Length: 201
Image (cartoon, rainbow, N blue to C red; front, side):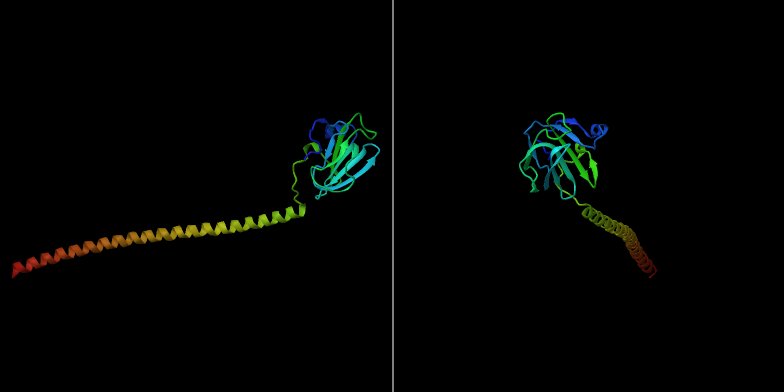
């Protein structure tokens, strides 16, 4: 979740960079506005000359959500749950032109754009777990491919056998018809022979 109930942009990442600052986000926040923990994580608080009172949430995946210019704290440190009020916004620090909340996000030593960060992502997939699952998926896909190939082969073989059986049945029916015809002709010939014998005698 986003750390404020209302999200109104003042300036974004590119504006901060053009101003000679690192990528960050400034949003509208009156003095005393409740600040919520955006995610489960470890809370740290400290004071910096430029940002005044800071709060940092360290997520289990290592992402650091840092928020500055705070008026005061509800909690100072420790494990917190998403949605817990941890502080109130303010106007502390040297680099500020009025009450607002400054947010910056750090991952592996690099700044991320808070405006495009997934604030609704409460489920973390750790890189190692993700790689393991990718390998399992690849293995399963290979097995599926093998099974599919075998299935298609056996389907083809079954069709060949079915066609062979159909041909055999056709030949059998043809043979039966020929046998029936021969039997009928044999009876007719025998009858004719008997008639001729009767005439001769």
